[in-house]
Image 1 (cartoon, rainbow over the protein chains, first blue to last red):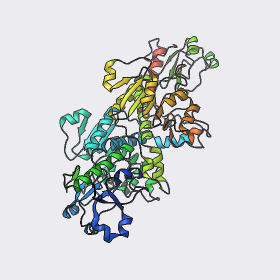
Image 2 (image 1 turned 120 degrees about the vertical axis):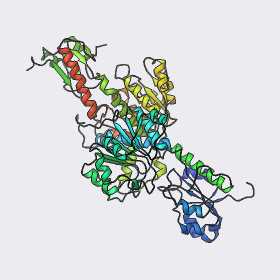
Image 3 (image 1 turned 180 degrees about the vertical axis):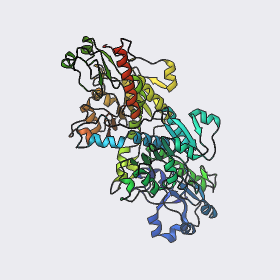
Image 4 (image 1 turned 180 degrees about the horizontal axis):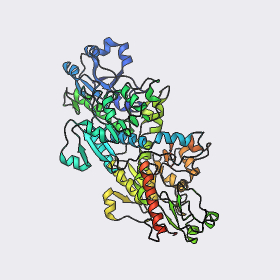
Length: 327
Length: 282
């Protein structure tokens, strides 16, 4: 608005590995006065009262009580993606700060990522590419085989929006679909994808050729998949994780993979991210790892940015916040 | 021994069937091929010796369609590139530089809508993609509607609209170098070419040039000419290319089913019965 300064919004940084994208800055700067953490720390006395919103891209900047106390006019935190396990919602609420995420736009890309990992793992795509381009390759061995996807059994742990989109995709591959969820889905939803509910996760684990994790990280799902669960899985089964690294007991997973308790794993998420460079998961031949790119397509990231900007603007105008997350 | 051989089971295009071999096997009745492609066989020559031929079409379609989708997804999400980043010692990258392509709402152009092409359409529909297809003949309306596929009588029309172009044709004199410089230039500069047919369907030199100069965005090739490529071939070095070692039907289940189909054909031929999947020289 004319004569009014643009609202001051705190970001972690611009550019670099996981900073705000340079391509997005133009759009954001038309609406906000962006302050990086570096700038904020250099000029706290002036900026702390001006900052009214935080644009949290890839879980940064981290928000703790200290930061909240020093930003008395903070009204909104817009977080990218759907997961909110990195936020202390009660704490934020106690400071009168509203929180928003971008829950639906990420769904198809994240489901696609789950399927990409499933197919790449089963058909040994990464290994195959290495063979195809290796200077040492003289011929392709005829007995070099992968595992069939069509007709295999997929067990989806967590049948929310993303889990259901995975089921829709897997159905087209003629896969048998089992799912485990806090609540059973409606009959019509189950029939549409041919999914069978497993009240006990054990049943799903014992029958699945592929186990795909699509749950939120909560105290209940923390280390949901540990030694016991891995041992219930078939020795020919593959674990795919597109949720959060902490859903899996990572040490137990390493052991299970090394001892052939399960066949393979494909992980878009680990704990931490990235893993330390000497971590055993990086060296295992039967593991594919991707750098948390579930929703990382050009189109989706642009929409996420627009949605976050919209949520901030609404929050600062005192209007209902689109995609608000309640504690 | 030559007189005792009544059937040949071709595994991975071997043994090579030439006139000399056929002449040395007077009691040969049937050649059963593992897989569906028959372009490595001289069908007329084999038939001239009174030998029947069979392929294994039933076993391959789902598995090959899966290969196509695996390549499409791996290319769209830059899977090989990002996996290598994840395990690299330095892990220096900019997320903005490794963004992938959203499939929902993107257009897949399928060239060759036989049973494999159709299974690809079924899969791609579940990813909420728009589907165009080009085929010698148009499919039935019900088939089109079931996968929401739009027929492109002219291949140019498909090439101009598609974000992903998938080649699923047999190799014949008509499809040899079907995709050349002209076709690549018709494609969008943001498009990806996926080949699960035969290397010879693509003019490989034209493809290299197109990839090097940004005429198209990327390629994912399960097949090349030859296989494997010479180790100094430019395709091996391009960052925007995924090459896989003819994954095709190479799964435990599919290879078993192929063997079953081949055995069925062989036993039928030796009993003088009709072959379940005979291939005649056209």
